[in-house]
Length: 373
Image (tube, rainbow, N blue to C red; front, side):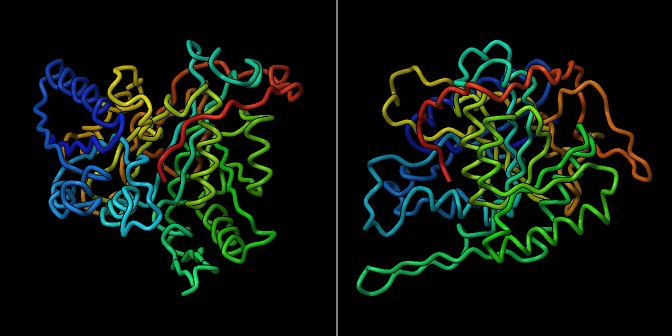
């Protein structure tokens, strides 16, 4: 198999973790007789320094022509000036928009070897296996932003269209069907009109296309609490851009650190964007102590994201395969009337008993380093 990768090391510890990820991909190529090509491009703060643009035209062009994009991290104190014309994070937002990457997948799994690193008790963490679907190209991050002439009033618009909600919910529901059959939609419909639209559209998609899965709706503030009190009860979670950004960072502390979790940003066609969810961690950059686990943990699955199971390139418009984010539960739910979707495989593991989910005496969460948008 021939595949081309664009590497975007970015800022802070980004170059260090991407260097390790490349070694993993090169080892995979040797072991399985693949041919991988790599093209390294600038993005974020370093791109501002070199080109005056957090997403140079050459970087975007290379990403569009690749099979997959691997990102390190963007941002840092050097570029935090609030009066600056642009910021490193603007490059990441633009890349998502230009590549049509509307779905961000963030798996949260408690690894047995690392469970002692969690700030929560083991009986709460045992069995945690959540797959978040965060809508990535709509909502308040991509709405209209304005500030008054006197600088005393500012506004940002949260906006969603029916089609944007339908496609992310449809993708999440398909994943739930191939995992444990449970989908949770998170909104703030008791206050926000945009969340009321989200709730109506999501309910319609599930009722019409996925009647065989268990569906629930949770308000975002309640979800923030439930992620700490009963995290093992969730399977697939779907939500909007801002809520997903916040909740997935909270959930990243369940296994101990946001530095331990990978993510994938995908669209209906073209290359996907793969990255660790941690930030640029400038305080440890260059010291050789950054943990590169999540930069290279999705690495072996990257080639498959651009290929069909037959080894042929994915047809334009085809729903992308999502290797590496499967459920670890024991059984698969029956799927009447519908053929099993490809890409969400189940691995065997015994689920936790009800008695292992005590909600009492929860210790406080330790603060972690910031993550990107």
